[in-house]
Length: 508
Ligand SMILES: Nc1ncnc2c1ncn2[C@@H]1O[C@H](COP(=O)(O)OP(=O)(O)OP(=O)(O)O)[C@@H](O)[C@H]1O
Ligand SMILES: [Mg+2]
Image 1 (cartoon, protein in one colour):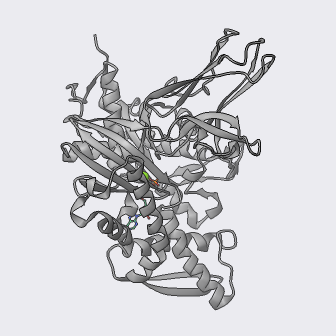
Image 2: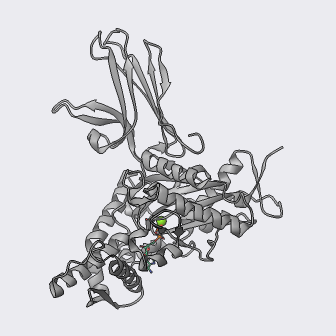
Image 3: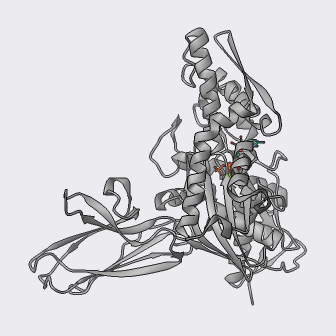
């Protein structure tokens, strides 16, 4: 008999830098975002931890603590995922991005359990990650999920998830679409070919310096400059924690109002001194011009990677909270023409989580399970699936001829179809070579080792052999979850080993 799974037990979670959102598939087979335990649909990705670590608050409750203990409130930590950065300590707890993400995820899971009245709600999740997250960042998310007590069934890249939600909602027929997600920490793009209910990603690009947070920094820079020139005051998060936090909130409010109003007044206070600036829509556009130029570059790079012209694109889908920014809308209209740019059929805020939920139910169904609603009625699987591309190139470290530096010699290439694999054979340098150090890098072709991520490493002891014959075989593969698998095979010595970095969750 086929196993049956309740729909609330497999959910999609979009761990956004600014807001975390979650969705499930309802009885009609449609994705639907669900509210958190405070009753709101988006959860600020903000965590408060008391000094001793006894009290942990997530979301709006954490944000409220910024007025009282700003130094114990952690936000905008997505850029630190996969790094060793330590934000601080709370009792025995070392506050890392992995730990912070785990707190947010725990809160979402608690919300799911309350919302559905089921202690097992959200016991399996599909989590979205930026398309350009590397192996270590993806592992960090898995570790967070493990800490939060759930299993990651799969990852799906954020713009790819959005394209599933778009594909299901709008049924774009056979067409070529560009999804542009401008969120809190990054702008991500995916070029997608829709054909016969399958969304095939042809290329993905992302830059984690082009998010709403960076817009906030530019506006904050204006305030800081005003404090400096008017009062000779250095206004920073360190020097004025509480006032800086309030100014950040004001900056976000002003930025958002500029998405609908012609001008807005930005004010801030520190040491009893007040500064105020009026910003017009035109000044805002000027301030963002360099960022928009970089977004344009990113978009054109995405098209170039798949050898597609601007005129080939049938529609452009705007995603993410920051896609409401007018200079960004103007940019898309300028490149593609107003008619091409759409977005009304899906929610810019929830489509990523919804896409994750679509993928979650598709996976469960593909594994032979019947997904049912609370009345135990079978839920039809959404009529859309996807194929993605490799997020980064992967290769082997080789010594460059000129300076002797180690660089990545790519074997699998970024934007290649995924899953995918390649096999390469190498010869020893001399007949009596005794060692071979295999270093597998995730990065780009010819990039220096220091700039790449080492995803696997192995020192192999060699028996004597002829250097004229290739004797070492390396198999590199990306699985469907964008994880790298590495097998080394010494064809003379016989050793054959899977040196894939061991992974949490679903046994990848
Ligand atoms: N009306 C608006 N005008 C301008 N910016 C807005 C508006 N509404 C929301 N934003 C900005 O959108 C961002 C949040 O968007 P979103 O929820 O898509 O990001 P995220 O998913 O958390 O981030 P990421 O995808 O980078 O991880 C914030 O920077 C927020 O200030
Ligand atoms: Mg997002």
